[in-house]
Amino acid sequence: MTENTVRRWQSRPIIDYPVVIIEDHLLLALDLEDAVSAAGLNAGVVGFASRKKHALRIGGLAAIAFVDVNLADGPSGPEIGRILAQDHDVTVIFTTSDPDMLGTGVSGTMGVLKKPVSAEAVRGALTYAIARRRGDLAIVPPELTLFAG
Image (cartoon, rainbow, N blue to C red):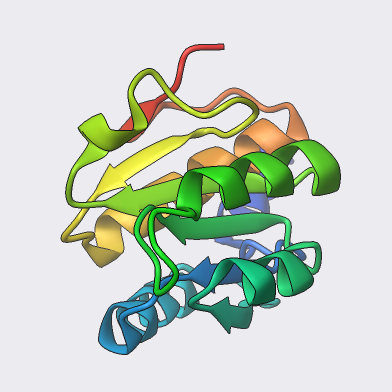
């Protein structure tokens, strides 16, 4: 009986966790979208943004956001991430080629994936983020650097 329950739980898709992608390079945003889809999210990607104003408008639609540090309007990613996390309870995962730009982290956000980001890294980060949202235990994927606190 327990075996069947475990098997069913492991085979269930990751659902009900809509994602927004805040990235100013279209091809990178589309690659992230493909990786999110491949991870099995039924809600999938619900929006894209390349600037702060639009990111804040759509960010509250998400449970999880992938946020680039440097956007079309400059290095607004950290501020966007902080606002989404603190005001909208969005789990924020930054993506950047230079994680040192974030120092020890951004208040309320989860961590950072270094670009280029693989589909495997996205899946691992999503699985970890969802487990944290649920209050479950999870192993931090090696590609994800968590922020203190």
